[in-house]
Length: 438
Picture 1: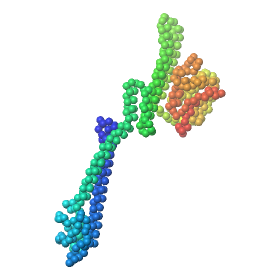
Picture 2: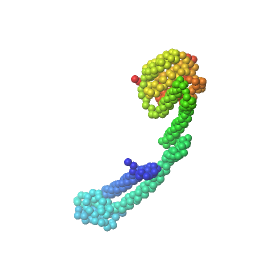
Picture 3: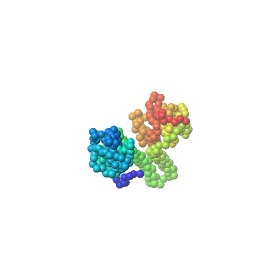
Picture 4: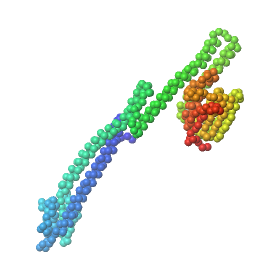
């Protein structure tokens, strides 16, 4: 769940989150330093009191039946060292002789309510050795340290927030460029614009490159759709114009039954051509949908399609040779059947008297004994509505190879053509790593 308000910009949200984490870390660190320093200073003072008490104990001597400090023993003036009776009566004092507040006779190390550190030790004969020292200097050092840490932490947080905003701004500039570009394209429709690629290989550089690749793909798709729509409109207009001409001619004056039947037969063939063309256009449009690959047996698909073309083969008088092995590939069932059917259909229409179909090693190939199209025309024939030179009299829509190329492009496969002495060969080869075991 986000801590920053929803109305804040992404820069401020990133800065706000960074500031919260950094503030918590700095304050926690400052608190740790403060507590550690105070503890160290306190332990140092207490160790000094113990050492002083040890030295003072060694300087005690008995004179006139009473314990006294050696005359030459003169400790630091910051420390007060006393010899006390069990009742609290002071017998001797060295060091700081300033009148002291009433101190407890509790043995051990403790802090007096007035802030003094006191160490009381029991000696023989019921005598007490009390060493005390004011802790004002320690408290002052600790207080100054706390102020320095607090001020330094505040300054570090301010600088870190400014630096965090600066870094967030620099990091998000490519995102701003993408947003501006998207707004520009949405407003103007000029999809040829591209985002400036960020240098390096970080996430923002990958973002700009990915957006540009997406725009390139969209641009190519839009251009192909425009070209497709233009050519499709032209191809559809031709048979529609012919049908309209036939109708106008038939309605121009009364016709006998035989003439009308001939006219209707011609119109029926034109309508059938339109239906075939429309179905091919729909199939070509479906190649832009999501890919759904499945493991398929290529040999079985080839045999199934070949069986449906038995009658055209017999009619054409051409001979068909099959060399089929069991091969498993990844493809789509309707598309695979259409690819095999179109390649075999082209061989029947335009090829020589012998057609060889081979399935093996992840490859489907059709070889006819004809010369095939000109090698310079092959790339053009893979586009919609393109036909070979001198073949305009042969029935067809010019979508057969375009459909084959569109379907093969959806699969882990490659379409190729080869001009050999024995004839023209078209092959679809699947990538070896993508073959699927049965």
